[in-house]
Length: 153
Ligand code: HEC
Image 1: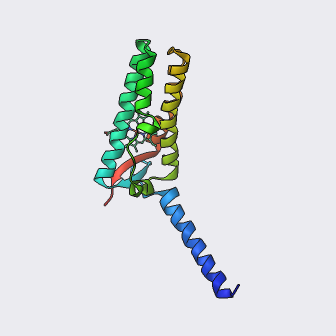
Image 2: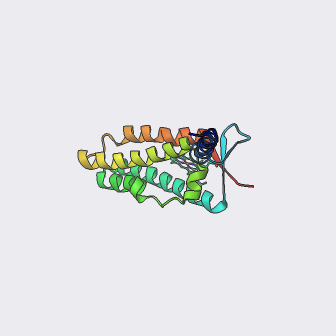
Image 3: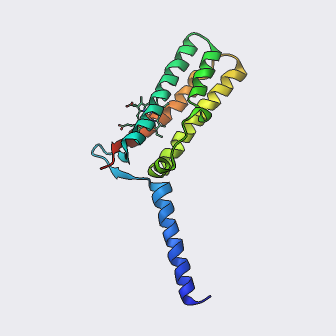
């Protein structure tokens, strides 16, 4: 192939890699004043993420209540409400602003709620719910330690 063609292929490959890095890996982030990484979002995007977060908190409360009441059906219903299929669809523009590690932790958390719902349905009792919830909540702690949301300028 001609030299100029190789050069153009190279430029294209570098541009695609840069775009993938920007939109898939890094997201739109800046170092925050408290040492965390701030994800910069528009007000409506922030609202959407925080609404999902309050859903997580409500699910954890209901799951714990279900364990106290030894009610596997209530635990399963609460866990499913925070599982992957129950989530709002996330606009592509927002997906591009979230760093890859954040998305991974988010998917894993929804997946763990789904797994908890499946397990409590299968075992038919609540004996293994707390150990699973403890492991799941490590994701809450890890993500909050690493990220916060600031409004984009
Ligand atoms: C993938 C990352 C991630 C995971 C996992 C995660 N959170 Fe969050 N959560 C955040 C971020 C970022 C914020 C905004 C924090 C800030 O700006 O200081 C937040 C905020 C919240 C808030 C505040 C909501 C509001 O309206 O202000 C609650 C409550 C919350 N999370 C609960 C949870 C619970 C419970 C879990 C686990 C079941 C969880 N989160 C898992 C990233 C995450």
